[in-house]
Image (cartoon, rainbow, N blue to C red; front, side):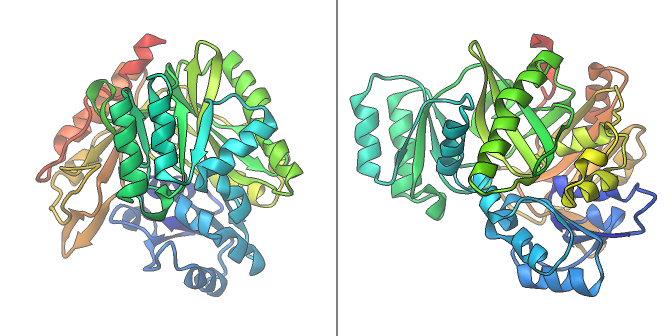
Length: 425
């Protein structure tokens, strides 16, 4: 079988690496891929947004399954184009991808489905939004750009001044482009965050093992929001009781409500949850594997990922045996470029990758990398996802940071406390 992975981040490297392990798969392509996917798959120089060329490549190469990694092509309708060409593809169509592409749409579906989430209000006019914040009692708020903003469109505001500044950044300064022309203002939820990812084929829902992401840039959850600075799995907060609640109160009602809107969800339904005193509440929905959650979760998966995704694309998840998991925990530490999540430079030579590759129970997943001659160089804000598995969480963390110490480039940095939240469980 031949598989095409669409994307170029750490999630896509993890998908390519895992799918290539299947006995049924003899070739894995990654479009456009990165310096890491070039080692575990074959890179194809096609941008994720060049849907016509992706379809032509999949047709000419007789690709058996295409797996779409990032949200941008999903929201743009890449799955619709593949299905129209009668190509097997794993991922939600354009209508279903609105769950991530529009915060307003997601809130509408959650309200219809009676899914627990924060109280919220939508605004298309900056002055109306500013007046709303100024006229209510001061309280912590979250300001969200409605559209896609590469994980940076959410601002947690503890003061009124912070909230007003976030509104102006999104709606007046247009820092997120058209994604911020509509915003959602919601109450700030307090608690532990947990990421629950589930495979969905329209009717059957198969949850994956839970992970905990670290969104804030710096140790102790300080600093601005990022696309994720690291993750670990399993998350001890995701007890069997919690998972039952999430499935019955969040995942099933969401998929069922979409069906009532004539939208069949096929792909990954990712619920970012806050575990509040009132129970789990949805912070956001994503419609693809999380990055960096995919790296530690897929490292623990013992089942053949290709079989599972192939069945999901065909609407046959109910025929797949229960997933098997390595009980040992995994930790993924993201190494980032100086300046991220703000402006950063590209093109710094990365040293020490070969040394890190020699370490047992460790895999360095590439996210923002490319090749320049014989060198691997930085090509993004989040550059690497250094991931390790250990007999316990402390061992996995130690191995991951041991690999991090092998790797250097000008301006490299990372959080030092990935997985420490598990102690609070």
